[in-house]
Image (cartoon, rainbow, N blue to C red):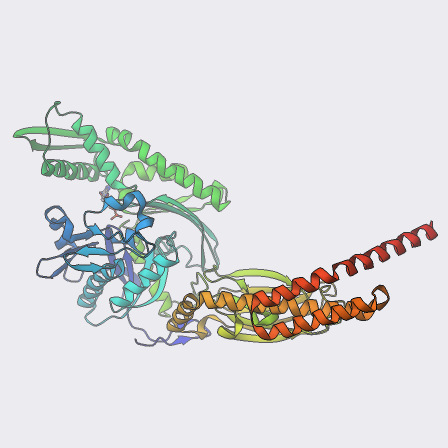
Length: 622
Ligand code: AMP
């Protein structure tokens, strides 16, 4: 794999190769790149007719693979060998698909467990990652044909609601297609970038991105501030889209055919295509006229814009309900949304535009770009930023690995979990474990393992000058601040005295993608043994604290205890000390319980004495 050289200061790439912006869609995919002369992003078609590549893969009987437009006829003729909507399967198990598993015309293997789905074509099994990689390869080929050279780097977009498994699957598909995936970008982020939203770092924006495609709908509310895109909320329906408009028109027309006339499969399919044509025509005209021969008889079908709008009103309402939910979750007021961006072919319908403009009534409507291309164009802009061609802009979204500090027993205490958005600020309170402790070492680590020794150390500093207090009394606030450039600042403050110390760490660029990947894989492989080790370490830490407290108690309060009690306690203390060697959490916890059980009455005795002395004191005072 070619290496990326990153300028640590600017976070940009040093070389100026083409970096592709790819919209890997459910129905259609596109590739775009920054056009050098125009400084504008441009969708590429290679030797194809159109920039749009239908996300379809057909496997011929001789093993030939056909991707895109040429695979379209096979959906009807050979549905079992033609894969569509593979994006819906990315990072999913059969169980995840639930009632939607019969939506697909090809064979999805049900292994009745939680493993990821596979698709069976003839005797071969394909993972959604392999299938997506075939689409990505087609896009890469197109780009290479048009750019006249090989390309190896890309930015790929995913829906904002994609989870980590789905994002990782997309990244892997890119790798399999021979692409180094520099960034996985949220589709609404890319769409906003295509309209230039967020390119001016001075301006803050709240953007609603409304994406209505053929079969999926989602709306996301973003806050863009200082070049940082934050997805505040996202809602939608992964089975709602322009296909539902077509279905509503078909139903309407079927109502005009005399009862008893049965349509063949191919007639139903043809009527659906006529409905889609009529819908598209109505985006420009007020009336659409068409005709179709059904069972030997010619039928005339007309559709006015008013009729169409009425038919799709309930579907549109569902999208607006999702907008209302997204707005509520974003905790913004309607008037705070200053831009709305339209994405997806179905937003070409006037009724859709009007509905969105009506809902986000305080926003400027961004609909001037081709809604099919918006996401890919934005991805190309992001790629351009990563290539270092736009100074001052740095788009960061999430931190790839957890950040935390070492606590007692060498355990990792995570402060900013992996995948947290950037910038981020999290604080946590700690205390001392020894009486009179005046220094506290803060060691900062990055990684997913339970023990810091398995993670990567980023920095270390000592908070000095903590006023001497009993163990557990000082309140030490540790703040992690991860800024937009991926630079972590750690600050420790003792809250009672105000003593403060701080350090700056640069965690993000220290690791290559492969290292991040290895660390994540390690954390999965070792998850079980890590948990066991953590439990032993926790038991030992608890034992050490109890030993410390009990020894101090005996030394200070001899007069409360009989000789016999002192002797028995010291035997129990010894047993507990010896058990630490066993590295067996149950043995250690067993001895802790015995010691606790035996010494509990001592503490009660001490409390009784303190209370009676206090009461005595009171009665003297009063
Ligand atoms: P996408 O999944 O974003 O490619 O969107 C495809 C959907 O957009 C399909 O349902 C198309 O029928 C629909 N579409 C394409 N062109 C138009 C148009 N001019 N007017 C209305 N819908 C359209």
